[in-house]
Image 1: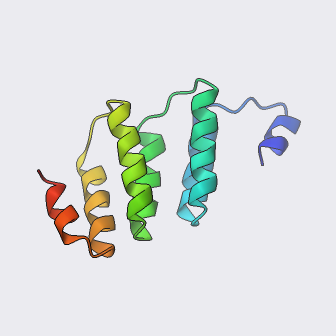
Image 2: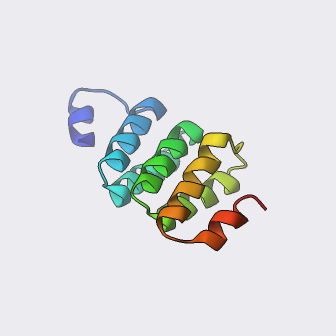
Image 3: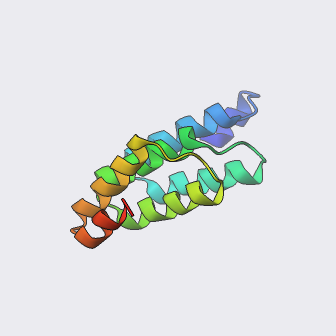
Length: 108
């Protein structure tokens, strides 16, 4: 996909990467989405909640607690603000994985 973007002489920016990450994560291609996120960082592009929020939400929708925790650790490492939607996604993922202790610990 990035080859096609380059063939069109488009230099991928944060917006382009966010679309790719969101699309891949939404359709269950979590590892590929994360590789785009890492590539985005290597290129020096800004990763924020527009990048990580949808990744966390779609991972939570599938009950992928590991990916939610990985992405949430990235949120913390970047000192990004934590909003209600983010907390809701984390709780949803942990509940889907039947991690009730983890669900409760999200609040504390």
